[in-house]
Amino acid sequence: MKSSAKTDSAAAPSETKKNGKALVVYFSASGNTAKVAGTLASAIGADIRELKPAQPYTSHDLDYNSPGTRATVEQKDDAARPQLAGAIGDLNQYDTIYIGYPIWWGIAPRIIYTFVEAADLSGKKVVPFCTSGGGGMGASGESLAAAARGRGNWVHGQEFSAGASASQLKAWAEKL
Ligand SMILES: Cc1cc2nc3c(=O)[nH]c(=O)nc-3n(C[C@H](O)[C@H](O)[C@H](O)COP(=O)(O)O)c2cc1C
Image 1 (spheres, rainbow, N blue to C red):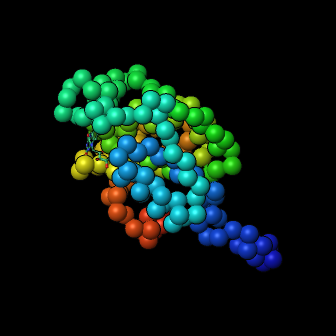
Image 2: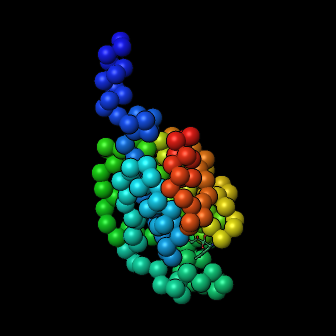
């Protein structure tokens, strides 16, 4: 008993033992979420993957003050699923998937729905996180969990500022 416990702890550092191998996937239009994702991945030793839209968003697309612009039209359309530029990639090796995004019109950008519907999240812990202009997470994670149709063990997640520190993000990840 004693020797097998020793072998386990030698094989895996504490956060790896708790959450397994982790991947941080994120979408970021203006860099804030990218900063948090990068700090988080390096703080916890996770892999990182950016979700890129097949058709990049221009600054006009992102102008939420004009009703007909792309991001606003997509966000108001429950069925909008903007295409990803590349394949989802293999998620088999990961036990925990962090999903980072900016809040757009109170929820995650529709491209995140494209990801959660296409990715096989079964059996994985899924942890949403966001940046926002002050609105916070809201029910954005719960809405994504519903889109994943029962795949993944979703936790509520958290909002961070772009300048969130490595120690703040690590402490949060360790408590999940
Ligand atoms: C189309 C659009 C809609 C937005 N809607 C909201 C919103 O509903 N609530 C909010 O707090 N911030 C909103 N924001 C602000 C972003 O969430 C915030 O600037 C975020 O940090 C951007 O992240 P990024 O730099 O990773 O793209 C919106 C921004 C855009 C471009």
